[in-house]
Length: 136
Image 1: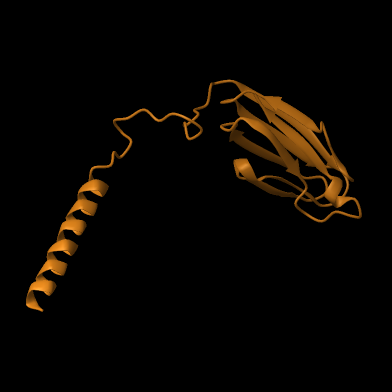
Image 2: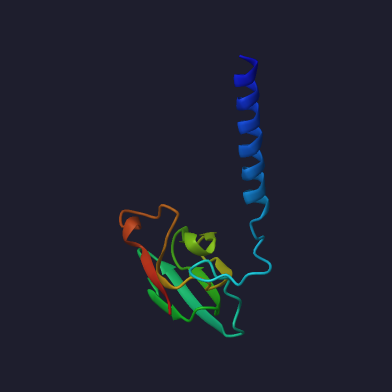
């Protein structure tokens, strides 16, 4: 019985040591270049500014096209009722009262086509109030 307990204890210690060795041997990323979709995109210095009108039930312009790494500046104005603008992938979520002009800035650090939309119920066609952000 004592021999079996000793064997179990030794096995647990060996596995614990192996697990600790493998986990502590992982790189913290500072000495290895990261590749793939997790790459950090830094601002390119290119700034794209858009004046956007929010009105029932649309954004003008409804399509915005930028390049990966561009700094995007959006000046969004509500022309009629309370609206909002949301681009979750870039951390944008703003409320616009009638006549408000909201300034939004972010770096386009993800490639793809993203929807921006009104995130404040604004009337019967609220769900159709969307636009497209294209990041090349």
